[in-house]
Amino acid sequence: MSKDDIVTVANFDELISMIEAARTRAWQAVNSELVALYWNVGKWLSARLEVADWGSKVVENAAIYLAEKRPDIGNFTKRTLYRMVEFYKTYKDDEIVTPLVTQITWTNHLVILLRAKSPDERRFYIEKCAAEHCSKRNLERLFDSSFYERHRIGEAAPASALVVQPVRSAVPDVYSLEFLDLPERHREATLRDAIVSHLRDFILELGKDFTFVGKEYPVKVGKSDFNIDLVFFNRALRCFFAFELKTRKFRPADIGQIDFYLEALDRDVRKPDENPSVGVILCTDKDDSVVEYALSRSMSPTMVASYQLALPNKEILQNRLRQITELVMEENQVTELPCSDEDEEKEESSK
Image (cartoon, rainbow, N blue to C red; front, side):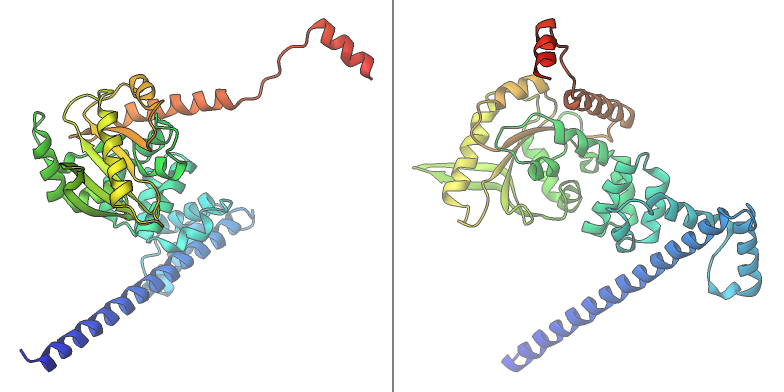
């Protein structure tokens, strides 16, 4: 192939990129218009359902009318029209979600409306779909793996004092790795290799801002060589994430190892404009009290998470999240201490 041929091929590749980018923008524009239409249809029907003159059968009558007069304009059945009403009523007063509704597909909206159990859960999945352009398959897998519950629990899990809230939000309390198809008994090397072999699914667990840096990532300290199990970089948080894999329960001694690796990354790999590296110890089980004690003196932003090789029990996670929410509400509740008789006398005299 001549030099001119190589230049021509490069130009053709650029042309393909231009076409694909334009098609993506066109699809996004069409989807945005379609969802906006369903929103406006739901708004129109909702207004008439609240007027007595129209009656409760306005949706059924609208479906019949559209089917008779314009059968060519789409599948506006009684069921789909009620979905549009539900869609509008669910989000019309949510100032955070309303600007995002046209950024995700109607199919994903239907999945969220059907499966999410609370306003916060709906908002969580809408924001994730808008940010990461989840397919229906990926979204359903997130629901199946209790992704919302795992992340909310992770935000309240023990972490070193240097872990800021955006980092907490990026690491769930439990990783669901059922897609690895590993036996219950396995070695750390097997786990590491399986994650790399299923990197696309693992990054779905992490989030789209994570990019893979390396397996058994080498760091040299003095004359000694060391290897970090897995290293990722988060583009939004602008920092490295070092994963240490343990096919056993968490031990306090694990903290020293990850602290050492983070120090090596920050001294020799991290660039001046990047944030301090974050450590994640991924183990089969952990005691949160032991984790809290172990991390209380840690000088590095480190978290401990567990992983499961089967889909987690959603009911157990929901109960745990409910307990955490109730505990946080109790801690944040403002209570007034009763005044002593002496305090009351002072208060009266001051008046």
